[in-house]
Amino acid sequence: MKKLLALLLAAVMTMSLLTACGSSETTADAGNEETQAEAGSEEADAGNEEAQADAEANAEEAADAASAETAALSDGVLTVGTNAEFPPFEYVDDNGEPDGFDIALIKAIGEKLGVEVEVENMEFASLVSSIGSKIDVAIAGMTVTEERQQSVDFSDAYYEAVQYVILPADSEIATAQDLEGKTIGVQLGTTGDFIATDDIADTTVSQYNKGVDAVNDLINGRVDCVIIDKNPALVFASKFEGQLIALDGAQFDFSTEEYAIAMPKGDADLAEQINAALAEIKADGTFDELVKTYIEAE
Ligand code: ARG
Image (cartoon, rainbow, N blue to C red):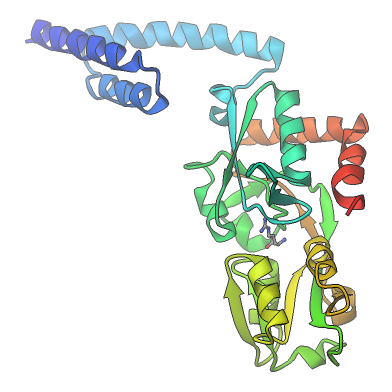
């Protein structure tokens, strides 16, 4: 019986090897799962011992090289989610590729860590729940909030922000009180959305998948104002100079926010590596260069 199992196992392993030759990630994973499912035979145990010895050797190497140990980096690719509707932090460039401050920053981090960075453009509201499955981490001008911290960890903060209020140039809205009862446009699932929905009395909140669509509806008179982060607010308002103005949220008692990279909860190794890379990028002047190129050039 055992022999039969062993034979079967060998057959399965050969098959997975053959299919894995296409070397697509999913095929290789499926192969691993099959092998695991067959575990329990002596052969599998022997395999485990070998694997353990291998792992120990690897750990030693990794300690020396301080190289990727976390699952998120072990395949040499850091898959990064963003929502490229948020200039100057992320937008789609003329070639249809995500670009912007955040994209350049995460690529610089990837370079320090010796991994390739692959950017997945998705809806902002799906980012947090996709971490650990579709994506390894998210960089999206994402504000550190307690609620998000229930499901993800954040890197050290890299940028300070505040919500701004975009208004028609002739609007009389000027204080927090003036916002009460108004129809407010926001990007769905953002801190601007939370402020408009939870903190201001009697509002009607129009939630859009893209901030720019909220701004278009402001132009069309469908909303009274748009609440969105400072730098995107300045970019969007400048596209309609003379028609729109962007006011500092401090004027409306909005508190400051901090952007950070969202990471899988509890992956201390990944956090340590990302924070170390970020610190290096700040220390060696790369960070300031990126601010100049992407943010101050706006
Ligand atoms: N800072 C805000 C938040 O975290 C908005 C971020 C929107 N980012 C984007 N890439 N669309 O909720």
